[in-house]
Image 1 (cartoon, rainbow, N blue to C red):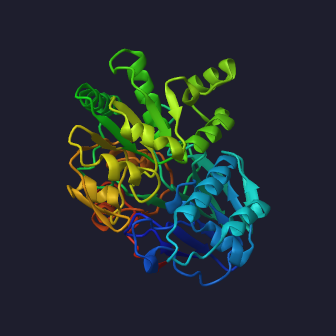
Image 2 (image 1 turned 90 degrees about the horizontal axis):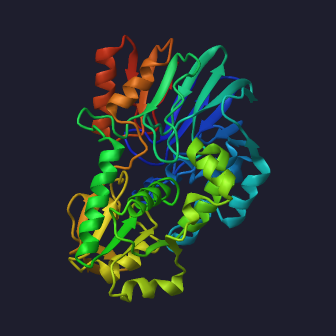
Length: 438
């Protein structure tokens, strides 16, 4: 049995793992690298046609290349129903926002065709896949996100995908109570020793304080956020602090793909935390449909931009790579009364990462844009930090080897080193294109 890393090794982006033996060939995730040049954006070419593709969740770094595989190989694609619907929405948006000069490996009709090959999977329900068995477990990262447990020829593998070890406002943390696994493939986005994520309540309080300070000086708050996951978390946090009276009641605008994603959150309300399930069940409204939030169309953006009153906008994209946020930065980024809130992990090579690291001149649509607004980074991240990742590993029985992926090189090696110090197991930090024989 071989495991080949077609992408997502010593990097964050284009996650894609090819698991194969003589009878079975399975692709785990098929993502794009949003911060990479076109030649490194997509996974490397598979050596053989897969029997199946399995998606852990819908974020583009795990799902954005799936239509290309389905187009080429016409194999079944396994995922939770939530992940399938979110993936379709996000990939259509990715195509729409793509630069015309870039050659995409698929088109809109290929995205639509994915429906014909989709297989719905529920958590904790064993399923035969090719010549093996698969079980998906809740990963806590995003609505419908999963860890993948595989048994092939008697060998067991657990692939965590993106995994979260703490509760959020919308989801419970990962389902640690999984079956034993000899090989664990685990992410390392926050795998370094100094990657200690603060308590979410503390992060939310700091978030609210920064917003309050901005609104008090009559500024505007721009929150670039992933349309799936981070936006819903930010919306619930702002709503809670406004209802408590801590934040003044100002308009909160919702722009971009967030509006459609909120509809998916309502559609799959049974996948959310019990408190939200009860609210939606008894009121027939989701917490993202309250009078506090105002959905913005493209023609209404000028109203927000030209208003002299303090206000908040939550908009795509989370890494400031495209979407409405670019217009807001062009028009409002030079005003030092305003605030830009980054809310999650920023991949190297993205504008969001540049802002996080102190860059204050961005190139947008071929023009230099000065950023005089304050920039704060708040870790609403739904990834586990090193302590959380170790806690997850400690709950898995029978581990013989740990393969560390989905992390910048130094973080992946730091986490691998720590695992080796604590557990009597083999550890690997593969590079893109490397094959590890089991």
